[in-house]
Image (cartoon, rainbow over all chains, first blue to last red; front, side):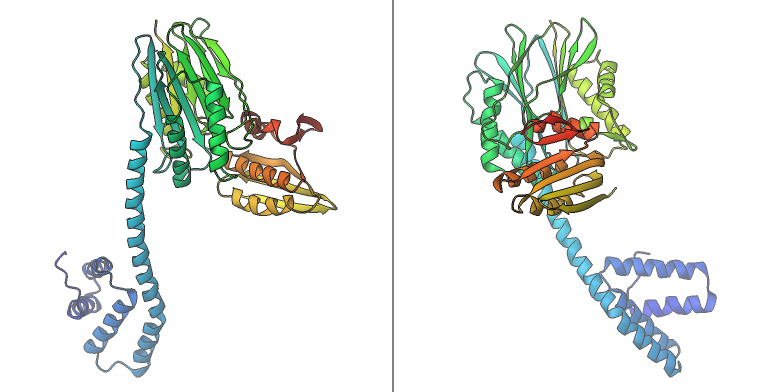
Length: 336
Length: 111
């Protein structure tokens, strides 16, 4: 039907065919006519105009009342025609915005990309998925000159573009820290001042910073109001919360952060996450933290990267593949 | 899910009773009501969260803004009757240390 001509003659023929036969084929043709008209941006009032003319040509002696009623209908439809034009314009605008946004999202991915470090004794896995195009979560690995591994994980409240812009600021501030040993409490205190100065009062950022000393397998960490991660002890086969209370970034510029320390034994895992993980919903229920720990336990025989991927797939399935919030999960496991 | 906001003016005391969910969709409405109250002179704003069944981090943002503006105008902000899940959010983010929060007439956090 792609050769259907959108003119008065075609419409008249189709209408005549229907009036005479009232068969399905004629109706199908009418449907095709309207589909083609939509593709050609023909507005509803124009179709009525065509109908009116076809009617007059087929039945020149249509009573005046009917003729007048058609004029009346035409007048009534004009606003629909205008609305349709507006809709077309908005549609184009939306496509434009969408493509701009996807360019921005790509840029963000490049900006925030981080290289997963390789160590003999440390198996590292990380995954991060935005709920919409832009990601308000952030994780970053930094190797310092003394062979320690710094891990930052952060979550901006809110989603979408404002959150993503904020995250880029965090990334640059982190990059400008000197490359000698980065103590978690000092990193967070610095970041707190940056956020407090530069971010709107209703916006805030939660952040966890950990430093893994690869020489003696000790893990130092501080938290700025970030969702607690889990520490998995291989010897006891238990998960416990990594408790490290501290105020979110950007609320009070003079906040100081406590630093904690954990000895990491072979097989032990450090699990860091954002509240996109704990705020997953299945149906109307929230996922409890114990459930997350159980899912990780279920996959713990796999390499760290596969664990993070499997856990993400698991919760994505539970939510019918519609994330409500950005989702980030990082796992470090001491191998030897 | 919706958010219902009731404001009762009891002299200097403004009692804001909330019911429903505070999330990205309802938070702007809460902010619009709450912020002007924190800017009145010598106001004590008491927010009752007993009927709040869900709150996400956007809600925390509103309370942080309210706290900042309360301080700016030398007023007082107090949150009362928080359900466990909601209280946990304030606890994790360290906000219990800087916002006065009362649960079952026990002060859990101080100024």
